[in-house]
Length: 335
Length: 304
Image 1 (cartoon, rainbow over the protein chains, first blue to last red):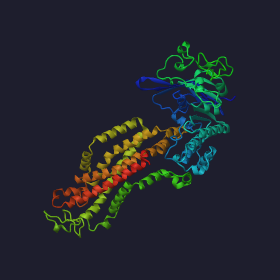
Image 2: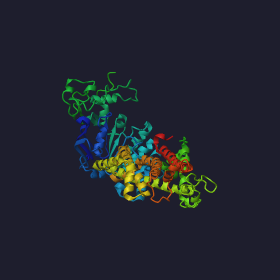
Image 3: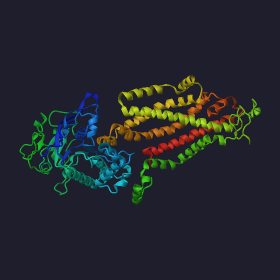
Image 4: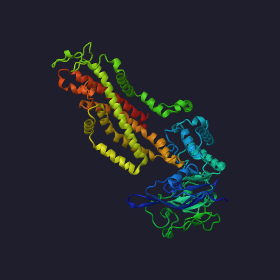
């Protein structure tokens, strides 16, 4: 297999907050993405998935944030790179699609201006050529009558259209990596499916690497080849999609799956995960999920478990749990 | 805003004129606001008077040809020849009022314009650079805010001599910190918005980020403040002229000074106080109504 395009290694992000305390928002996250591959990062709010995304593009505020580890894009170290260097990386080699298309476009500029701005910035082409390219991009993301739409302001477009525009802007200079931070969360279900299909097409046609950040396991199932499950700033389980869905080992992953409705009716009531995400400020020893884990034991409260190759497993998954669920144990058992 | 049918909406999307709709939308709301119509009419009325003063005025405002009719105990009021009567110097009051509109509007608009532009410049620099530049500018505005504007006006007049320039400076300077702070704070607010992050994430450079994304979105409160502050500027200018800070030439008609000159004659010739007073009042009212309409048109919370 080819060399990974993006390698995140042991990424730590710590926020300094009032009173001198620190929040470990991202705590030792490592993953890699190859060209043409889609990697999912899934977790509930506050698990550190968006912070990871912002860190990759150097979009975290500089004050009160400390980062360590390594983020390599095609061998170039992005963590700690100068703002000047990062401005050339952003948009040109890696771009991001944000959650809320309603607020992520500038309300006072036409769609065309916002597209051509990025195009001229990175491709150094003339205005007319940039307009042609902009229309081409809108056409590519499935917006009808692209020439007309270029003259529109964001508020004149629907949410789905705006997210397509956001994707078009991200695609402006054919970046090798796209990070999509909950790109479908603010859209309704039919539009979600269309936007996911569009992203899938982009990955297939341009051999783009896609990092899909979401809390929606349905999105993961629909688009990702491999999945990293994050909890409290750490990856607790990662595996190929099929293995993860077929045989989730970490109790948090199992809890996530059990809380999602199934269409085949194999399940009665949805099972919520008890409690709420642990307060990352009040970091305790041991597994962060222990307070909510159904299979918790004394061993879980001692030392935090390391991320290791899943035991008793032959599919290269990794896992951060001292007593994982057995291989092949169905999520919806025992009810 | 009325509900559009799907077809109208589609037509609107394809119409390049309507597509350019942010300013148009605001403009449409202003035109539909009766207060704006009243205010706008008043403003246009006075502007026309100021512009066409030489044509409109029945007499030369400096001519005291009727001085022989002035007695210490009686000054002729409105008559067929002199609609607004004569003033204490035997000049035609109406002609002086008409020419006075020039001074009042010019001084008001000019001083506010200078204050707003200078303020916007400092606010822009503070908001764009942040850090110590921001702190320095904000402390300077604190100092400016601490100086009483009347004292400032008197000192400016003392330095450059009694003139209309002194009034312009005196009205402009206190506006600088107001506009600087306003632009800075709305820029700080806009900088946190998602579209700025998303523009950053595709590599838009800092300068275009500030000039093309942050500033245009931060201007609405400035426009509102400017249109509302115009009436205050006109009143302030009249007040300073009332206090004797205006042109050194007493022949130059200014509403504020016309008012001041008649304070001793209130019981003899009340019309000399009423006419300039009403002129100031109506002009200020016009700008105020219009400013309010601009605010309503630009404030997203008030959009119907």
